[in-house]
Length: 471
Ligand code: IDC
Image: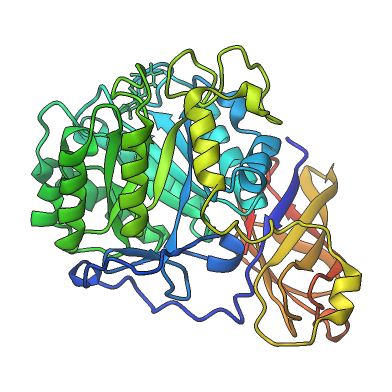
């Protein structure tokens, strides 16, 4: 049993516009748009659960948003970068808003090739909860590669996505990528069939979560998906992957024409070197890709967060740190990425756990719809009594936004059912794995930059109870 110190984001779900019930069936048919203004960078504390409208990724409020981040290398290869300090630095210093958790299915310690499934799932749990704690989105990536056809491990994929989608159903920061790079001649028809099956399983639990679908030829033939998209589920996007020293104008054109045909495209993996993940970098081509992706509001995630001796790794192989990276620790890919992510765009809103500033709060006039509400919950103690496990948490709710909030609501999502034993400084009820907290009169309003603390609860649960996220 791990002691958890979980710092979590929260959204004021009372105040956020409700999502339409059920996933829209016709999102694909939306108008393709080239945006005059680039979409804002999403942050879970502000944008909440994402959705797809037309070709565009949007926040819960329907406004266009973009994700830009980094992918882990294979979780089995480089588990050490799944740590909260690393994620904090990526969010706060690199302006990253999404981390992709790459779970290889066949290569090295793969999920379907003898790797420890429990250890890999534990890394996903940690990745999702650290991401939530640092106000980041997390993509659970079923990283097929040498297994070319996603149907090869269909049964394992079904069981895996059934399990993770049930676990993270109420975590708005989670997206699902169901097949990294179909290849080896597998047709779009076969991929589509796989995607419909797996999306159906995810939809039983996570009704509206965004699902990313790979496309033929190492996720390059988005044109084939555009010609025959999946219509049975909404909130789907189709992935395109590029490596700038290999893929240039022709693949960019394929991307643009698929979008113009109405296909929501997501670049869930790219490198600025060649397609082997090695070789020289091509920053000129990389710049053209970034320009085009920004122009079309496409989200993009760089490969890879490791110190492997290969060009695509963002750390030098001599760097043994797992967080607190400095410029000297970065490879050419890493330097380019840092520079690109931290220039031009507006910085992300302050991370949710920024220190409250009471002086600033006092000067801020009251208003009713704040952004940037977040929650911190600390496991104070846990014990076993008569064979039952008890967990004592204290939570505080911060208002990192620019306006006062006049009410709030927090939902803490656990990895298993919980029973409430005791609570204070809030009104509480439990629905399965979720603890709902609303304020008392005396801690209902929180000034901008302020916080309300000492919200306590003791729950009874399984012997490996974990708090997954807070919304
Ligand atoms: C590469 C890794 C490399 C690893 C190899 C395994 O960078 O260290 O040995 O996988 O086969 C992709 C894949 C991605 C590849 C990457 C670079 O999605 O898994 O990672 N790449 O080859 N598609 C195009 C390039």
